Length: 269
Image (cartoon, rainbow, N blue to C red; front, side, top):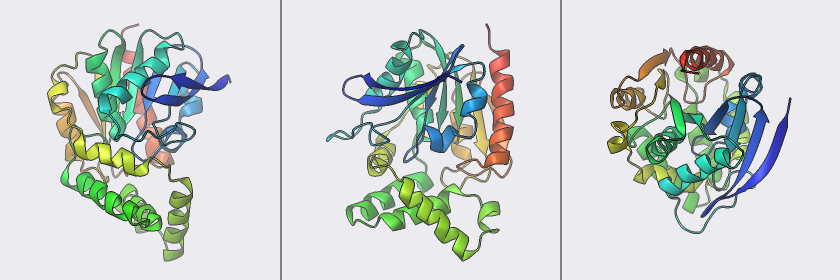
């Protein structure tokens, strides 16, 4: 299967971009403190069987440098769109996860001639009290250098109650170790952006088919947030992932993939 990594020269961000497969383009918008592998790794190969999957890394993830200034939502959306266009794809579906949902919505309203559909999971138009509070905690802990505490917060927030109740204290510590090892340098910057973004006024401007997935066991983004996201977009289809966590496990991601495949199959050719 074809795979390529390259840098995207896009001002003000120079994004590392992972490209796989061939066919109609799917542009991925990952979540805060995550990355393409972390959010979509379980389904990348499957999607690349019949699509070109374009996965840009946000500033502070992988080899994408983190700017000195706070992140800008418009610039981030523009850079993602450029990642697809500069690789020869004039039109594409955008698949957003968590923070990436706001990025995807903004991309659709700034570039309506290019975005043909949206698939949004665990998203929000504006920070709800839980994810907003988590962003504030991450800012305080990050300034204090308490990155293990940030990793613990991430684990406890991103797993579902169902998952947590099956874990021993040793399992939890192992998960914290893994979260700490994989934490990107842009963690604080991503969550700081969450505290400022607001795409509620964008929603009524979205004119493309939209699928919104709601993981009902999400402990970081209240399930009502993606429901409100869907309610603001005319004609949006909502599907639930019963008990799904903020980061979907293998079984829930497989269910998500089924919903996405059906959605993609119903789009106009």
